[in-house]
Image: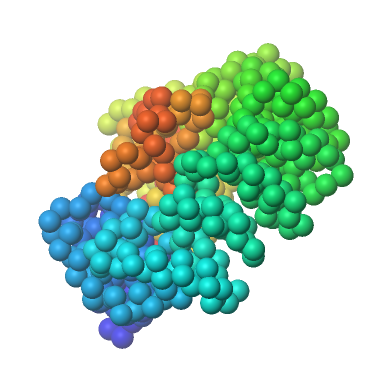
Length: 521
């Protein structure tokens, strides 16, 4: 065989058996650059639940002569390591050193997504002196515009308070460097003086990033400046969006009054962001504004913004569920709102139930029994494949929003490209009709509520960081690094997949299963 079989590799990566996934990682290492997208495939396995899989990932990345292979090792290093992974990791770091060290020093590696893991790389290689080299390069101005951003981001991620001070005072600061600072704790110096100066920058992207930092670090000294930005309808709306996000975090009566005013103005381009700020500061008032605006002719993107704002505030989804039942939203509009909710992949039984009622959808009532499973398997073997395709892609079910088949679909849930070739039909039926009973490894949702009443939902990742929880956002793939001391509560809520298939007729269930049974990669 002269080239790797991508479909077989994909099927093995998505296997429920950790030994098969480990074999897939080993195969990718042997084929190396001949495997299309090998880096992303290894990164996807780097945080696997199984230590055996993670070990094979490290061994494989060491076989691929590319500076970015070290990022795969760094991703593995963010999860717990046994002695076998430790040994493989040490060997990979040293074996690839001649490639990654020059690239890192030249600013060609972006480590933002692997912060703690890359710290482990530096410790293992005794190369912490490289950070000193980067400081010297930047201070001496011996850097070009192409490589400067990554060097500055590296200093933002791995540096100390003195480095942060240096960065905030850096002449040609890029927005992405400020974005990289948001995961750090507020520095222990008069940071508002530096941020106030940066607010005068002519670049709106830099201004927006500064405003975001003011919110993240809760720089109360600059709240008046941020309120002026939020209130000014004549400036770039993207800058105002950042301002409303910031005031929603910082709070205060003046901020609440302004956000409530703008949130009630359908002609203001930042109405939805203002509503989000109100939800953050005073959830009951924000929910009333949110439900009121749902009666407007909003597109799915605007509806999605509303749900994002509500989902990020502890208790707000339950409040919205109650408020929706008191609303006068008609059945047709309720159906459109429900379709957007399903596509978001968020979890709230109360809100799902209210949206079902608004849309006139009957409550799921198919009992989980062996006879029902056998009946649906039989229907699937006799169903219409083409009709099943249409159902899978329909807004009614929203499957395509979360699941990828070949190169089409979302990445919130597991890839289904080879589902029919690797999963028994009985299990497919169970996972589709009663999704909470069996959740694929790595796709069990976790909800974290912070002490500031912020709610985050995602997939918890194994981590060596004792003081932090790693939570991968299921929609964006972004990694949230949450200090354990900032967490008020944390719970496993299982599958985010709703039982929407139970609203189908038996004929439609058969058609959908016919399609799923025949997905062979």
